[in-house]
Amino acid sequence: GENVEQHPSTLSVQEGDSAVIKCTYSDSASNYFPWYKQELGKRPQLIIDIRSNVGEKKDQRIAVTLNKTAKHFSLHITETQPEDSAVYFCAASKYGQNFVFGPGTRLSVLP
Amino acid sequence: DSGVTQTPKHLITATGQRVTLRCSPRSGDLSVYWYQQSLDQGLQFLIQYYNGEERAKGNILERFSAQQFPDLHSELNLSSLELGDSALYFCASSVNAGGTTGELFFGEGSRLTVL
Image 1 (tube, each protein chain N blue to C red):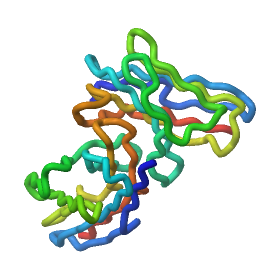
Image 2 (cartoon, rainbow over the protein chains, first blue to last red):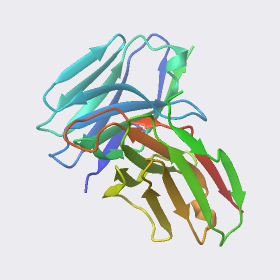
Image 3 (tube, each protein chain N blue to C red):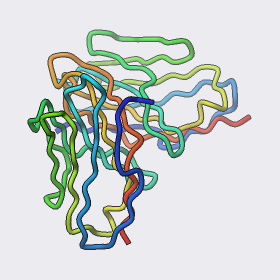
């Protein structure tokens, strides 16, 4: 089955700096890659996603890149703010089935 | 509010007992997913249902079972509970099971504590 790895497990950045989180997946048939943000004690919420027919997608300070050949995708957050502090999960899915999540990255944005 | 409702929000029980967690998906969503999140851990996929039928299975223990009813709500049954079953159990729903992709909408979770 699908296996998703995520690095780093923890990340601390200064406010205003950029943060990059990387994920790799094992199943070349996976075609949908969402990123979820989970604040302490709350439910995961989608922040951005990318489909396999697209190499990059951007939404304000957040961007995601996908390299299908290498089977990895990355989340980029620019101009980080304290409210970006949370746990971020990547996931891989085949046609909306069996979403497999990475282990998560705890991001701390230091003032 | 995601539109996904989970009950109960908190549950404390003893080892060896059985509990049922309930999930009502967003209106119109046919697919329901169950995830287990242990303390400071990731989201472990348990099982997915689509329109009443099991669609995908993850690392779900034999002591656990689930079903989706004709009104699309789902229940996760956990039996012979062990201390290690203590976790936050999330239900998520999406519109489709396959063919198209879509966002997963998570409920607030049911926190199970086994003493």
